[in-house]
Image 1 (cartoon, rainbow, N blue to C red):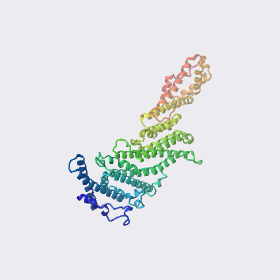
Image 2: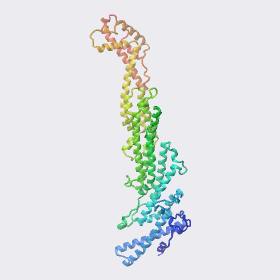
Image 3: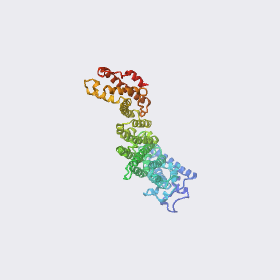
Image 4: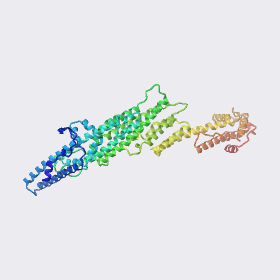
Length: 574
C-alpha cells in the first residue's frame, strides 16, 4: 500500500523550484537543474517502489498461470490495480525524462532556441546522471516509452553534435580557433576536422553505452509476452550512428572538396614548368597525407563501433560515419592515382636539361611520399578499408606507376645511384625486400651495361693517349675484314706506324694514363673497372704482339718491340 500510494502521489515537478519556462506553461518544455541529493533520494525511492510493485505483479502472474496461490478473481483484480499504477508511474518517468532532457521540443520536429543556447556540457551531464540512467533502464519495462525516448535522445544528440561541429568550423570550440581558418592548409584542415569528429565519436560512444545500458534477461519484456516482443528499442550502435549522421554530410562535403582541388591541375599559361612540377608534387604528397589520416580515423572509428556492438567482426548495424570515411578514402585513392599518372606523363615536360633530369624529378617525388608515410599514423595500423584501397597507397604500387619508365631510360651512373638510394630509403618505410628486389635486379643490370660501355670508352681513350689508338682501330678493321694477306701490308699497321706507336706506348708505361672511374662511387666496383681497363689494354698489346711475331718476315725488322705481353701487363698494374 505504501508503494502504491507513493507511485500515485509522487510529482517530479515538485522536486525543484527552478523551472526554465514561464509560469503555467508546462507544455512548452520544462528543464530543471541537476537533481540535488534530496531530489535524487526521492527519485530513487520512487523507482525502488516501482521495482517492488513490478516484482509483486510478476509473482502474481506466475501464480495465476500455475493455478496456485490466491484465487483467480483476486489475482486478476490485484494485477489490474498494480498494472494501472505501473502504467501511470512509467508515464510519469517518461514525461519527466522528456522535460528534464528537453526532449519535448524534439518530439515536435524541432529544437527550440532556448535548448540550443544551453551550456554545451549540460546535456552531457544530464544524460550521465545516475537518476536519469536508472529511469531510462526502468522504462525498458515499457518498450514503447523506452524506444520513443531513445529516438528523441538520438535526434537531440544528432543536432547537438552537428551544431558543435559547425561551431568549431566557423567560430571555434573549446578554446580552439575556427577550423576554417586552416582551409588554405589541406592537411591540417582535414586533420582538425577528423580529430574533432573523433572526439565527438568517443563522447557519443560513452553516452550511447550508458543510456542504452546492458541488455539483461527480463529487462524489456517477458519472453512469453509476444505482444510486447514485437517492440524493440534502439541499440547503442544505432544510437551512436544516428547521433553522428548529421555531422557526416558536412564532413564529407569538405573533405571531398579538398581532395578535388588537390587533384585539379593548375590552369595558368604564365606558370613555368618548374613551378607547375613543384605544385603538382606538393599536391600529390598532401593527397597521400590526407589518405593516411583517413585510414587512421577509419580504423579508429571502426574499432569504437565494434567495441560498442560487442562483436569481433563488423556489425550488421552499419555506422554512417564509417561509410563516409570510407567514401572519402576511396575518392582520395582515385585522385592520388590520377595525379601520379599525370605527373609521370608530364615528367618530360618538366625536365630542365641544364639542371634537372627525369630520374631526379621522379626520385624526389618518391622520397617526398616516403617521408609523408613515415610521419603519418595511418600507414602503420591494420586497416579494414579493403585491400584494393590500401594497395593504391602502397609503395609497391607507387614504384610500378612512376619508376618503370625512368628505370628503363637510365643511362648514367649518377642516375643509378639516385635510383638505388631511393629504393633503400623506401625499404625503411614499407617497401619489402621481395618487392624491392625486382627493381634492384633491373637497376643492377642497367648499371652493368653502363659500366661495360664506360670501360670500353675509357680503354679506347687510354689506347689513344698512350699511342696505340690508331693502331687498335686499324687492327680491329683488319680482324673484321677476314683478309688472307699479311698484317704488315694492311693500312695503319705498317712498320713505320707500329714503330712510332710502340715508342710512345713504352714511354707511357712508366706513368700509364689509366682511367680513374671517379663516377663509380663504390670502391670495389671502381677497382674492378680499372682492372678491366688494364686487362683491355694488355690484351690488345698481346694480340698485336702475337700478330707481328707471326708476320716477322713481312716486317723484316721487329727490334722496335721492347716488352713482351707479361711485362706490359705488370707495368700497367703498378
